[in-house]
Image (tube, rainbow, N blue to C red; front, side):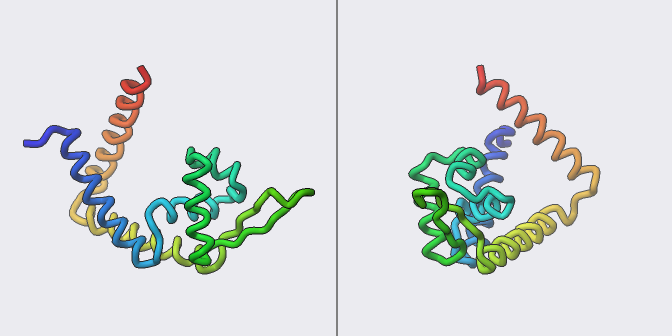
Amino acid sequence: MKSSLEALRDAEKIQKAALMKITKKYGLTIAEWQLLSTMMEGFDTQDKLSAETGLDTSTLSRQLKSILAKEYVDKVATGRDHRQLVYTVLTTGSDAVTNINGEYKNLEDTIFDKWSNEEVNMLRILLNRLEKSMTRVTEL
């Protein structure tokens, strides 16, 4: 039998592969989908996005350039020297995020279809507890 952490790692690989399949249908990577989702929450400048996502400037710039090229977002230069860029998610971007979110929710519903509400709630409780334990251990 696998250890708890091995089972968690294997489940994460399966979940990631399924999510990659979903996002790929819309021409996005998982990271780009997450970035678009963050932008839809109102984080519209590189500084705000970097602070919210924890991404370094070069990674964030690369992802922004990619979703700009795919025409999921638009940018406008602002400020006195026009060096500050404000990003806006376009309809194509918000539609993609909405569709991905819907498909991901359907995946989750299918996975837990045979689980009782109590089992799903217990899993959430245990995963939250595991996350807290792992955070505590790794902060030492």
